[in-house]
Length: 487
Image (tube, rainbow, N blue to C red):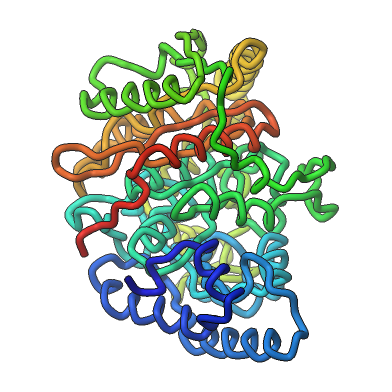
């Protein structure tokens, strides 16, 4: 077993015993990248020399006693290329930002640097986070490490693929409609979407500002809690950041869920759902029942409207957020144009992918005069009803349990010609973002073809401790998270 195959907490214990150094871990991860990256393409940028230099500096400072050995000290972490990193290319996987080097760090990056992590690289994604397969990247398609003919999910497909393939020990993703949980389900990682406001969005390049959240993607629940500890907390630079005390999430990791009440949303088991996915979800529920939890079916009656509401609200916000990319301020500018207006139009036409253009047009249309009330305002009212569904359910249940996606990972190209089918792959994750609650994806089994399946554990606002506790209890009594792809 190579060092790149260990978890964050295992490597931390080895470093505490002075058995290994940060440089050795980093070299192992870079060696793994050399072995498999040409087949997976998880990264847009690999910081090879910078990472080795950083690891050596950390080792020297530890030796001199100049820095504390925290659980993340010296650990190579990959960052989704949608998060600003000072002095490091940040592209959003889009041509229009192919040359953008931010002059500042996002708050989450500054917090990870305070823990003395080693930033190993920037991972691939669907352009601006718009997609469910990591096929919409200017830098090429990322492939699923379990089956290279299939997608890793999206939009944080690069981060999830890197973690399960050993190309990073942990990673950051972002989740607007399921972009951490769906790729975690497809790749067999543990990914958590925090409550809206729990993690600062300062320095996250916005897709849909009222939905986006940064969160961890990890090899197991303990690593997920360690990363969430570092990321969480109030940030005065982000007006949507909530000023609440941040607990130590690792203290929630106890394998006892006796008396816990679980709700199973009926609307998350739809016609046409993959039979193996449904079977594994119910197997997982029975495991939780054996551990002392009880469950009942519950109805979230407005779930059926979630996808429609999401694809009004998210594109509307995207059309506003992406207006800044005009070829003047930063990023790509077309080589030839006749006048200022032609420069704007040519730059944006060449700089955005078809999927991004589709969402800009959808958003502009729903916000336009005459259609605002009919579409955008109605979608916001539906969003309120969906939020109330969750609030009612959490009056009775501690958590809700559901599939992450109706199918396992699909073939590359299978849904690219049918955007509606692609949008439906997020049908079970989108309501969580609209409601602003927290949810996690944890491995719960494999299909007969060896494809991972994820279990979604949903918690109330700021209920991260509870969902981590349930996930940890499940993980301690199953072996799914230990299985590795046959690369």
